[in-house]
Image (cartoon, rainbow, N blue to C red; front, side):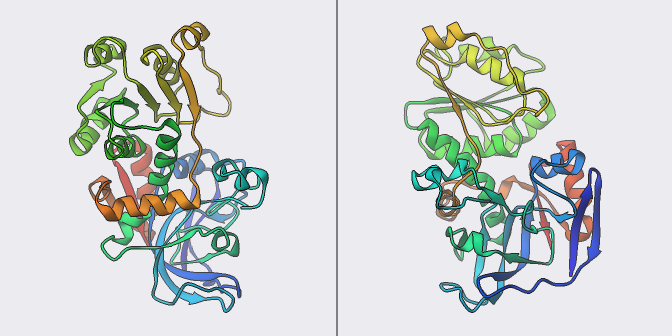
Amino acid sequence: MKAALYTGPQDLKIIEVPTPTPGDKEILIRVHSCATCGTDAKIYNHGHPRLKPPQIIGHEIAGEIVTVGKEVTGYAVGDRVQVIAAIPCGTCWLCTSGRMTICGNQLSMGYQFPGGFAEFMVIPHEVIRVAGVNKIPANISYDEAAVTEPLACVLNAQRILDVKKGDTVLVMGAGPIGCLHVRVARALGADKVFLADINGGRLKKSASVVKPDASFDMSEVKLEEAILAVTDGHGPSIIITAAPAAKAQELAISMVAPGGKVSFFGGLPKDAPFIQCDANIVHYKEVTLYGANGSSPQQNLDALNLIASGKVKVSDLITHKVSLDNVQDAIDAVLSGDAIKVVVNP
């Protein structure tokens, strides 16, 4: 079979490898769609501490079952399935207390296990035993199903924030994750949703698709002033930093409304993880800071159902589709910012 093998920074090759054979507790799928994300681009450029090359990468996966291990129940050849990316152990104290997203024993598809940039992929027992294989509803395409995993991460963050009717939400970062945040905030009932980015071209493209109540090009306007003007002078009740930028996190703390909430959704570079935080703002305005990391198997299922129900549309976020032979084009589109969401179709 063909696969995209990552062998080190800026080294991704399409090669022929043996088609894998699943064990008795595993499933083999034909990969129909594997969406790309900023993490894939970061791996391509810099590697990842949890990924030891060579490895087949790609973790936003949807495909068709072609072989079911004899000890696997509940699935059949021909089932269309979506596969989780982050794999909790299911047994540690965090997992058993409902915090699977921060499981200390977490594994990942495309990291410890071969991922979805391949014609075929084994779903390991570790995924199956935590209910990490979801059957795709008939009204959803493989491409849409591949966007389930990032949508589940967004859903996790907004559930932590308890986004609801009455909230005004500012999303900082107009990439694919920012677009999904806008869509989920609307689905959860937020009164108004705003979008901001330092890249005017990306903002214009994304805003034309997800249609926030207002968008702000931070290269042209002072966001602190602009956001006050559309929130009755008090700031958004919730700000989500969907960009790996310290400045965004610092601005969010300074702009959020009294009693408001800030989500640090985008992680910072490992060599520059610190920000300047005015602790008095947090203290006197009773601001709450939240982290958000990944998604659980249940959140993947919930996200898939959100797509199926029509409450969160993702098809129009897929701006680029490429074959496995052209996977480099997918990475380049992510790095350039030309795309919103890119799907590889092995």
